[in-house]
Length: 318
Image (cartoon, rainbow, N blue to C red; front, side, top):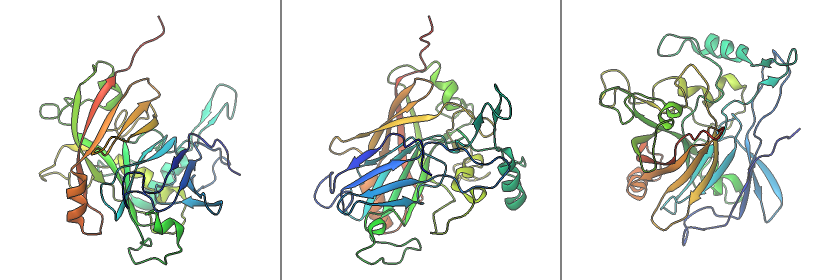
């Protein structure tokens, strides 16, 4: 069963220049949400890539399995890599009007399973369910590689297009009250007073999880990573205080990262990110060509980044 195929994106081969971008024309679609049998483990839902030339549909595990709103290609500035902006709920598996009308069933039992198998979070708390605990995200993939980084056969469609060996990165900022760009305020709250042109400096940091080609139940998914500090931001490190800039922190869901639109201007690796709270802005990935050159065919640990708001949360009720 596939349901709620949300906003899709048609990617043309080498749309950013000679050899830059995907190697095939690819139609990328995704399931936004799904309901599962209550109290039963589940895998989650993936994105899908349609090979336009052969009309073959492939599931993509490399974006994780938390369900998606939209996934769009952005400029990788490099012939060996692909890049995408990724948006969505990060766990849209609740059931409205269950078990009775007016109530919402949330699969908290999956958070219990996650905690029992992985232990508590870095802050000592149990994991909470993942829905809408997620930052803005990008994906970087290496063309022609299998999930373990080895060379793929030339006829491997997903590998040829960088959709097997890759890494998700989340937008992270210094969340300390004095030093941070938002004075320690999470994304939804900050946008209540943000004005056009306000800027938040940050880093796109690789999350710990990476697709290895094996389908597992959702407690093993990358969707849980955003409840712990990003790699390199441990206490005593140079980036102490950095955290994934989620909607409302590590314990509460917030507004969904809604539609994304690629910035196709020459020289930019960027996209516009919307929200179900009505705010939206422009997210930039900086120094991409230099960072990927330095990675020499592997995956970097982070990129510099910034976010400029176009419109804060606007009350339209009166």
